[in-house]
Length: 113
Image (cartoon, rainbow, N blue to C red; front, side, top):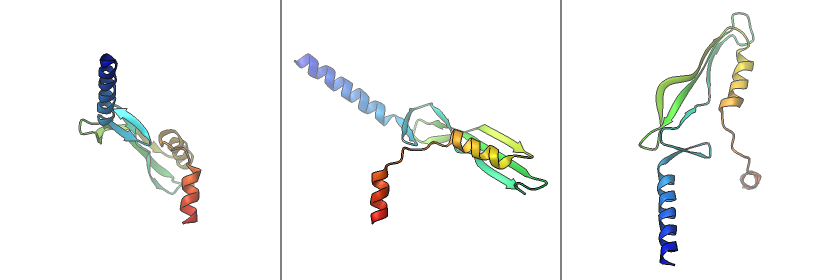
């Protein structure tokens, strides 16, 4: 019985330590050294007009030793567009930006208050 309790203690301690050595991003947990791409940003002129110019960028972030997301100074995406900027940006937002599951109970509670 003592052996089982010792194993249970070691397991629970190691999982707690593991949880404390991770970064959270959009409801997911990542270990130190993991990288993610942030949601893209858009800088555009004359969208859907003649002379359209757009730049879509997304930085790569890394889960650092301090358990915060740090800029790696590298880009996941750095695209200069001459046409189709709006559609491309929309597609990239759907690809790179995490979406949390909708909790309808919380939404209803917020609406009723």
